[in-house]
Image (tube, rainbow, N blue to C red):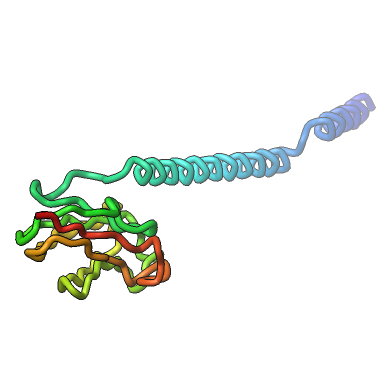
Length: 177
């Protein structure tokens, strides 16, 4: 009788040990759930860091002013943005052909038809500058022939922020002798 009794005792001991120890399938499921949760937290953290880094880069680059280098040495750089023209007063000599390098960092979503414009009907200026592309900016060199008579001429953007009626979307072209 000692054989069956010790087998029963041994079965009880194994049952007690098994109850005290977590089920290996349950332990794996619990570890898998914790691992999945940890992976989601790490992925979320990486997304947050990436968004903040990209936003910081764009903000700093925009606040720093003109990106890159002008493409034409003799051109006058003129930034077209939602705030207007920079510089707001462009000084040019009378009776000359001058190059203006128009540039923007504004995205297409902010612009009507995806462009900024520089317009002055009296001078025959009607230039369109496409929105910033994959490089974060858009540039276009235009040449204009200035009047032979000195004067101050209004230039404006007619495609965003209220167009011609917007006080911020105006600048001046000052022709000097």
